[in-house]
Amino acid sequence: MNEPYIGRFAPSPTGPLHAGSLVAALASYLDARAHHGTWLVRIEDIDEGRAVPGAAEGILALLEQLGMHADGEIVWQSRRKALYQAAAERIALHTYPCGCNRREIADSRLGFAPDGAAIYPGTCRHGLAEGRSMRSLRLRVPDPGFDVISFQDRFAGEVTQRLSGESGDFVLKRADGFWAYQLAVVVDDAEQGVTDVVRGADLLDSTPRQIFLQRVLDVPTPRYLHVPVVRNELGEKLSKQTGALAVAPGDEQAAVAALSDATRFLGLQLAPVESLDAFWRAAVPAWANLLRERA
Image (cartoon, rainbow, N blue to C red):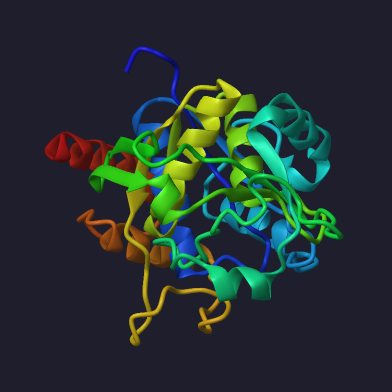
């Protein structure tokens, strides 16, 4: 790797950090440190309606308690709306207003995208019907035959998605007025110079859309590594909705225990340690060794 490594952890403040989020945070931190790179933290609170007051501050405090220190100023998406507006204006020729509501999309959808979202059938692609007004802003994906996006994930291997059949034209600005995650994350990664995205595999299926948007915006595509997600005993991804408990270590030993659990989930075998300093001294080279074994 010749260019300087810049990674990031980008939690959504919809609740406290839980074990699944800690795995993603740890993987991104270890990858940055193993590459002698920069690790940034970005609060993805663009969906302000779902943000829980105090959750972001709690996440930041926990990361510090665990010894995961950001290399720079914390970025908040809710304070960067002008950047998203400017990006949308730059690619206006590739976007169009959509007047469809959720029910209409559900009734006429072509199926479901791999991440569970309804595939948009293109109802407003050639203009709003008479009497309709804009509810959302969509990005036009290429026609079949020109819509295949492939990339090499550092964990999952080669990933291929056909955008027209597996996502359809996707939303950049939502009906509630908030900018969509896909646009915000692409703009932020480009603006912050992120070279490597390490995150949970639940976002793997969103990546082809983000890569297409990067190409439309003419910004670099980072390298990607999607780690497995932590699931509960029912096989559900850990989340606030599935009752995931907050990571709340009361002392240094509890902090080391939480981190050790996360490293085991990631496949790292570390000797028992009792301090955070000892944990990090062991965990970073262990991650580097794991990368070499997978290369």
